[in-house]
Image 1 (cartoon, rainbow, N blue to C red):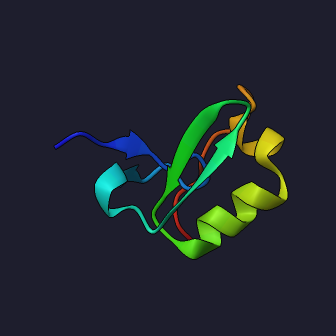
Image 2 (image 1 turned 180 degrees about the vertical axis):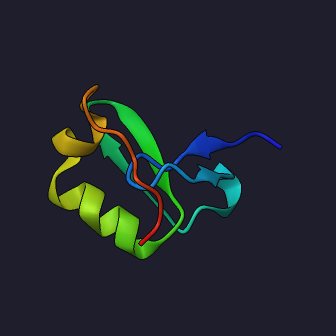
Image 3 (image 1 turned 135 degrees about the vertical axis):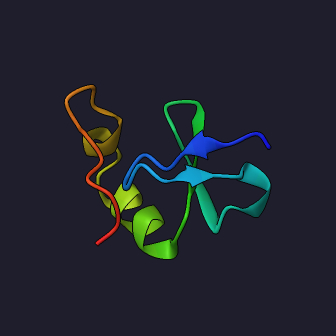
Length: 58
C-alpha cells in the first residue's frame, strides 16, 4: 500500500482513501480527518514548516 503522512497529526494515509486533500505551493497533501484538513487549510505554512512536528491525534 502506498501511503503518505498527514502533515497535521502524522498519521499514515492511503491517498485513495483519504478523507480530504488540499493543495499548497504546488503540492497535494492528504488528511485522515476533516479536522486535520480544516486545521491545515487555516494555517498551511505552520504544518509545512520544517520546525513543525506532528503530535498525533487529539
